[in-house]
Length: 390
Image: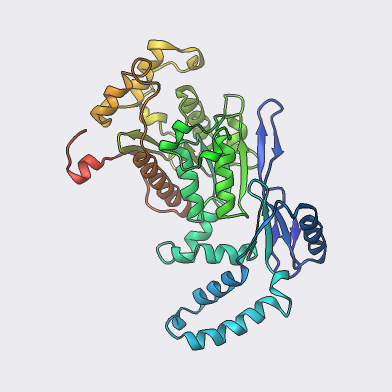
């Protein structure tokens, strides 16, 4: 880490990391490159980088605009007094730059996957402005707690919406994400991404979007997905997480990761699709170590050999966990058609977005000590809007 001598801010340059399941090591991955141009050393590095990469770089200088907006958020009483605001802003800008050219303030950030070079505020001011419109729906104390909470998201179809919504609200600045799969065109009925990302690992796709919202995020990628051998590292490396968002498809891993989370006292939140709605589960292992996993629905089963269970036996376990009464009729009927008339079970963007919002809300409540109890909640548009069952 390098500390800015001007603002006392810490820059963590090795942010984006990948967990290598074979070597069980965390490895550095493609990430934004930072040039903190209040430091002479970085000015030289920036000039050399631009000289060597001028054909690939597109510049977006939003720093002065951001300083103006930051000034406006700090002086809300001047919202309708433009003349006075301009006077205040002139002083504010001079104080910010300290007599330096604006181009030699802030941080220049290069995104290697797009070739974009963006000029932004230093991390503390950047985060202050980026979350300014959260106040007072989220208090400053809650915002800091949410920001500092370490969150892991396993499974990045529905889970991608949770990760992105959490990041958008300024939460989980240190986040671990896991998925072995790559984006396909059929994913894009529910996953927010462009066709240029087809074939890209889902971890990388999500990490890029988070970095483009918050370049100072600290993201750890498990691009090989999870296995019984890597669950422990996912929950504890490089440090123990505070919240697990579980959105994997593999029922065996869903069980094993809950067993480990329970042992570590980590709360688990998850959401399953049900037509346009969702089924949200909250397991507060952090406050109730005796709580059964999966709402106690697998307590009577022998899970010691779950990795070897297949076919009808596995289907029976899934039925135990997912109460058919919570699932809309069209979804129940569709699941029966998988492998016959349907390639896979259907999922909708409406459900994925609702899941992302519900999971982000639950994560924020956990991070800030808000009221959130263990249990299941069904969010159904059919029930809420009285359209009847589909």
